[in-house]
Amino acid sequence: MSPWALLLVIVSAVTHATWNLLSKRSSQADGVVFVWLVAVVSAVVWAPLFAGFLLVTGDVPGWRDLVAIAGSTTLHLCYFVLLQRGYGSGDLSLVYPVARGTGPMLASLVAVLFLGERPSVANVAGIVLVGAGVFLMGGDAARGGLGAVLPGVVIGLFIAAYTVWDSQVVGPFAVAPIALIYLGEVGRALVLAPVVLGGRRELVAPVWREHRWRIAGAAVLIFVSYLLVLVAFTLAPVTVVAPAREISVLIAVVLGGRLLAEGDLARRLLAAGVILGGVVAIALS
Image (cartoon, rainbow, N blue to C red; front, side, top):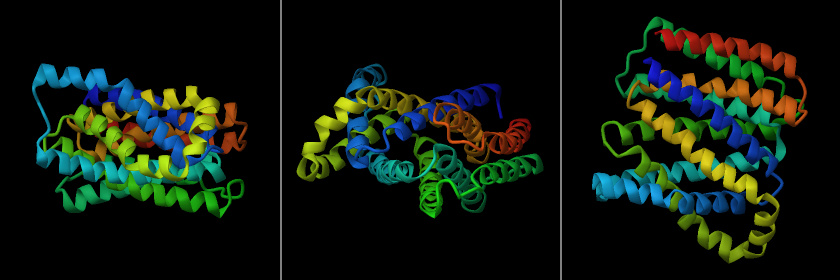
């Protein structure tokens, strides 16, 4: 992995773990309303940046691009809604590692089997270490129960799906990362609008009043985090970027243990050492 790609992945990991902390702290609110408000705020906040991108580059997405972006929007919508529900019943340091562990391993497997990528021995070892570490970290299901583990696994499936799909969208399809992310936010806001304004309208105001700063923070950090990852996809293959960004698991476990008092910090930090070993192996491959 190039130094620039590694730097992008590390910064993305920090921002990713942070917005997940904000989501966890908002998990008792209605999940669909929360996801919709985040998408709406993101669409408003980042509109000037997207408009500037269009004016400077003239790179207006065509129909082929919009179809690819629609596929990404669908996968991300399922991911965000399931993630918010998972946090409603489980610890950040349980749901997050299980989800993030399932995702990159499946993404790397798909990339090798169907996209023609050929990882080195060190790369394979790194993927195995990352996977082993995150599953060891989420291995104690007693605190969150089965209801926390299963959503994590399902969330991981969608992480794998959107990771592979989006890597192709910004790679072979050559869709600009900023267009993919911004139009994805707009798409989620539009798709969820009838659901929220039709049956959950009365929940919008109270959720906004109680969680507006977390909503705004998530809207900014989600965009930044994934933009960095998509740029990294243009500098390194999926088998390198997808597992390496899982250093965010270490950050999320520390946040969960220190700020949310979820416990079991020593064991989960030990497991994080395994993850770091995998990240080093991937970075040096």
